[in-house]
Image (tube, rainbow, N blue to C red; front, side, top):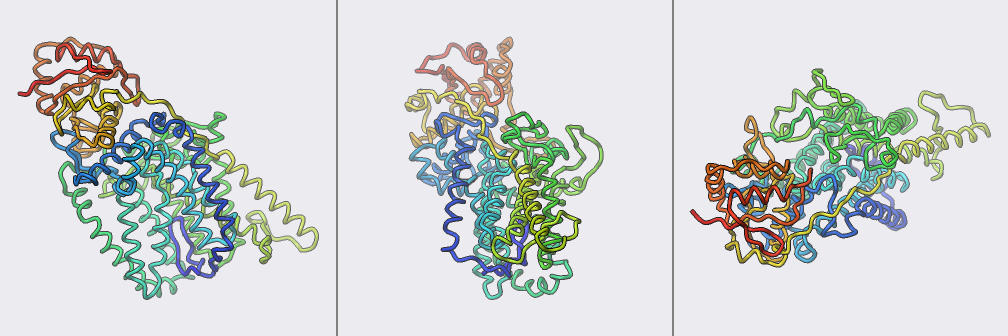
Length: 635
């Protein structure tokens, strides 16, 4: 029996009166949930499974390459005794602070054997698929074991949250944000803190989960903590629950203190690196106005959905990976109707939790709108509450639009509790008169039964109309350019000293990520290192001391980036040649490599223009297998 209260979008304090069903009574529902969640996860990621090592997510090949690299580097660091949170294999000579990036260290360590066995791209796909299925199953477990009696209600709530528009959007290569399974586990352990006499056990378990959450998705952990705090505060201030909250507070605070100590001990070094280590930065390189949720986005449909497939989607997100709300108007109306039904027809003892869920949803929706109102793509100067928070520590490193991801679990909980209420007569419990909100229950008799059936049909139709358009469709995928044989054969080792520096053309950044794909292969297949002068990472150098993507460019890498993007070959002077040689020696580059085929994440790369420019700068190249190569003489 659960005795926990609940936040976020999570458990309700009143669930203490709901006995947890025996395991044997749940096996069939659990099996259905498992098969459905795993099946949907494979459905969404199906395009990648056609060829895990060659296929990539169309709209986000750059982040996919980054997470593949993080898995490869993490495995390499584990087996070679290197620092998993700081590396000199990128951004030579300064290195990269991975603690201020999304290092996914826990994933890298746990899946290291698999990474070595099947390679980083296939391991990336395994984790992405498990994230989607695991998120739905974790919420199903929390609902079915602690919050609702109906397995159907738990399954619907879990599947909605696990495959909500925001989760499917972030499945476009975000291994951090697609790890939504962490939130229900953290919420569950937060609620158990109220148990008297178990402060150490509950605190240790929560502290370990916090450390895991920080490693995988620190921003999501921050939002989960905020949402839990808002929910619990609203719940505890309700006059019906003040006494209960006051009685539970000492045990809660003792457990919370233990959790803080455990997580601080586990995260001491990562936190030092994050806030005081080399190559740190303040804030983020992303504009909070651009990365704020459009108010109209809440009422429209996402791209990778049935509605999107028939042309009902919009382009209100800054990019396809950030459709954080996109619930559609029918679901918003249904969510309000569910709230009213639970408030007026549900157990009065649950009203504090219903109110807390509603307040949490409203607070996070408003905060997700960012510092200024943006509606239907039009920016205004009307200020919003986030403007007061955006400059605070931690807030300044988060993207406001992602706060909308908290709203999806709240809606999922409202849907699950509503279904649980509607099917109560099926379980032989006191029938619910599921009158429309605001309508008085009618008289009994045959007419009442007919009205009940009609209202049940109306609610069923409302759920179908609201949820069917949001059913996800597979992510868009493409074939990436294959890795050069120069890399896969190990031929590169003849031209680069152990740990020496190699650079592809164009230099490796987010829009031309091939270098990190090459490095990932070398680390996990050859188990040999070469370093890159650039890379796709967040580092210092942005305006106002904020972060930026990649290193601060020098003349040479900026030149090749422009040529690769535009195809225009500039006039090369002696000064350009001297500057290029100086830059390459600064980076300690031993060889410059141009592959026959180069992948551009946002645009086609002009290989011929790059060859002509590099030849003008560095002289005639050598042909080695399927690459052109320029050796750089030492100073």
